[in-house]
Structures are given as structure tokens and as C-alpha cells.
Length: 276
Length: 329
View 1 (cartoon, helix red, strand yellow):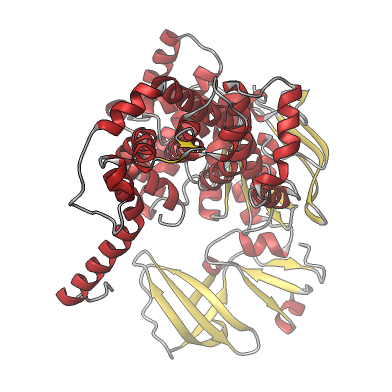
View 2 (cartoon, one colour; view 1 turned 180 degrees about the vertical axis):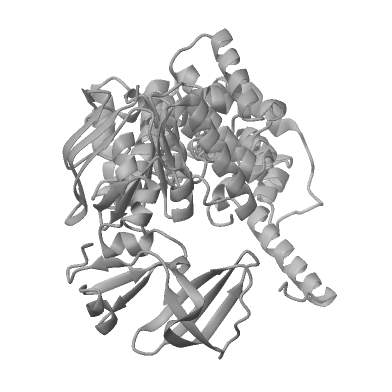
């Protein structure tokens, strides 16, 4: 039975939801407002909300002072590249774990997840040295590898849960119909798991796009993506909040648009299995 | 071609012996039904033949060649699953053509075969729909279509009708039988429904706890069950089994009389009617007889006996005799 909802109760729920949403969104909103203020207004005390001096100068200056298109392109290559590379490894792995599990499969999955709980700083030095030896510092390829490895446990876990929902009999039917292992994965499993694969892909593009630690540690100029672009605006002479905000807004805009258009897919993907 | 021979085939899952060892020959063109209660290993046996499970030991020969270690795709068999196992993202046409595509057949030949199968199964007007838009019976037909296009040496059916309603089941049963008549290909059919087994099979294999209890033609099993399990399993309603003094009169440990072999009216046994079911064509009575127990009686037509009535019964057909170990004498 549906729970009875009085208009008053609904009003309170709606207000509460708006309040939570605003609290979460406030930093982003503040950043966007600041990006349109002069440096003086940006640091004014008490904070100026609507009475500030508005300007577009920050954007013009950020654009003029740095090579935004190159950072943007690096971000695109690194986030999409690491996600596709990750999927290519994760689809067969998740297939094996979901459909031909061994005795230790559960342990293996837990172990993979546990690597995500390790602080990144713990492997910073060894990974940096390794990258240096291999000549991967400040290369897009190096970052693709690094971010792919960072996110691989999450990709495998997500795909594993989607694959578990697919009836094994359908895969057996394809085997009876003469499909090889690859035929089974390409013609039957992947198309059936496509909604799940799509949301895994989106989530990982977003994670990779937003990654700041490794992208800053492992790059200098050539392969630096937008996260390094933002960092470059915190100069030793001090922080220029308005310009920093403008740079940040430019960095998050593409992924914000992607997230906005794919939110249905993302929510559906993340609740897949929980709500049938 | 489609001769399948199992020699000492054994399957265990860890410590548990699901199939302790089976020898069985299925001749080319036969319609063989594996029947038994749930958990008797009939589906496992089918999956071993299909190659979807590996044998623990033993040999499976298909058409004279050792297929024990061949993958399912290379055994030349086709299977119809209980859940139909259609590919939900493909149209009916693509579902049926899938095995042909996997075999690398050219498009023109694929189309020709799909059209032919669709015509046989009355699916022509549904070819561009997806499985989700079809009824249960139509889905079942698509699954059969997918099996017949590749012209396998044998068909395997794993309880294919158990998801259909009663009326549809009777119809599909006839269609599968007719398909067997026209294709003359070996079919192995797993079911727990002994009516399906009796009506469709050339040969029934009765399984219990992973062992073959008896192999034979339907009427052979009905008339000459080799042990108590088969006697009780084949026939509906179940055979009445009587022990004690009444059995001793026939020099047996247990005697069995089928419900249709007992007449109501006059006779040596007197009892009280418990339950009476009237189907129109038949009447089923449960009669509690002193010194014997409850007997099920199947009387043709309408018998006017109600709960609590006293009736007299007489055996009027074959009395099956079994020794103390349950084997037929």
C-alpha cells in the first residue's frame, strides 16, 4: 500500500530536499559567482553576494594566459582512453567472475576493492619512479594507464553486478548455438549488458576527468589535463580567487554538460539490481 | 544421424555423486524421454550430453565419435531450454538465424532457412518482433525454430513446456511430436510430467537419484514396471500398493493394482468413500478399506458415491507382485 501523503507533509519533504540540494550545490554556485567578480570583490569581507562588481575579464584573461584547448584535449583523451582501456580488460574479467566463478572469486573481488581504500600517497613514490624509468612521466599514454589501473576495480565491480543479472541459460544457449567464447561475449553478453556498460563508462569518464592527484603528480606541461590547468592558477604570489574560479568553471563545464544529459542513464545504472 | 551412447558416465559436484554411473544407448531417430522426480539428475544428464557440464568420468559417444571433451558447439546438438533462453536484444529473425551466423553461413542461405523454419512453426508474421513482444507459446516456437535451422543430429529439450499454461501445453506437445514425425531426428526430452513422457516417447528412461530405474516403451513401463519406484511413478493416478496379509495371499511382499483396474459395485473389499472427484469422463474415489488401507479407484463415467458412503470393490486387472527388495516378481 502506498503511504498516505498529506499536502503538508509533501511540502516539508520538498523543502528539505531543496535545502539539501542547495547545500551540496552551494560551493559550485559560489565558484561560478566568484568567477564573474573582480579580484577585489572576490575577497571582500563580508562576502558580496549580489552587490559585487561583475565582470567577464577573468575568463578573457584565463583564456589568454593559458592554452585551454590543449588541456581540454588532454582531459578528453585521458578520461575516455582510460575508460575504454579499462572496459576492454574488465568485460572479460567480469564475465569470468560472474559466470565461471572459482572458489576464490569473492576474495579476489574484495581484494580488488580493498586497493581502492589504500591512500594514493602510499604508492606515489614507487609509481613515480616506475613511470620515470619507463619514460611515462608527462605522457598521455602514461596517464591513461595510471587512471585505468586506479579505476579498474570499480569498473570490474560494476560490470560484475550487471552481469550477475543476466540469466546464465541465455549464454548457454549461445554456446549450444555454436558461439565461441568471443562470440558469446560480443554478440550476446555485451549487447544485453549495454545499459550497465554505458553507465559504468559514464561514471568512469567522470571519475577520470575529476582525478587531480595523479594527473598533477605525473604530468608537467605536455600531457597535463584540466585538473592541472586549475592548479596552475594557484600561483606562489598568492591566490587569485576570481581567476581560479573562472578556470575551475571552464574545467568542470564539459563534464557538467555530459552529466546533465546522461543523468537518467547514470541513476538507472547505479540503482540497477537494487530496483528491478 | 544421431546415435548417442553413454558408457559409465559419472558426474559429481564436489563430494556429491549426482549421477553415480549411467550406461545408455539412444538410437538414431528415437524420441527418448528422461523422466523422474525433481532432483533425480535428469537435467544434469541432459546437460552432460549437451556438453554444458563436464563429465567426472565415463564416455559420451555421438555418432560413433568420442564427444566427451568436445565443447557444446562442436557436438552438433541443439537445445531448447525451459526458460526459452531467447536473445532479448535480437528480433525473432536474428534469434533463429544466430546459429547459422555462428556457423559462418552466407546470408542468402541463412534467410532461406529462417523463412522455412518460420513457415513450419507459424512464425512468419512475427519475424521482425522481439521476444519480449511475444506470448509464451510463440517464444517456445522461436526457441524450437532456433534449434531446427541448423539441422542438428539430435535435439535436446529441457522441460520445454513447464512454463506454459495447460491448454497450450497440450498443443505444443502435439506440435513437438509432429515435428519429430516429420524430421525423424533423434530427440531427448526431459520432463517431470509422466503424461508428457507417456504421450510423446518412443522410449522412456525413468531416473531416480541419478540411477536408471527402467528403460522401455511407454506401455511396457505401464504394464511391466520392474520395481516399486517405476510402478508408483508411471501412471496417473498412482498405482495402489498393498502390503501385508492381502499381499501374502498372492505370495508377494507388496502387490500393486492400478486405480483403473479396480471396479466398484461388488467384490471382496468393503470400504468407506473418503474423497470423490468427478471429472465427467472418469470418477476418482479414495476408499478406505479395512485391513488394506486407502485405495484410489478410477471408475469410468459418473459414479454416484459420496463422502461416507460404503462401497464394495473388486480387483479387475493385472495384479503386480513385488518382493521385499521392491523388485517385480
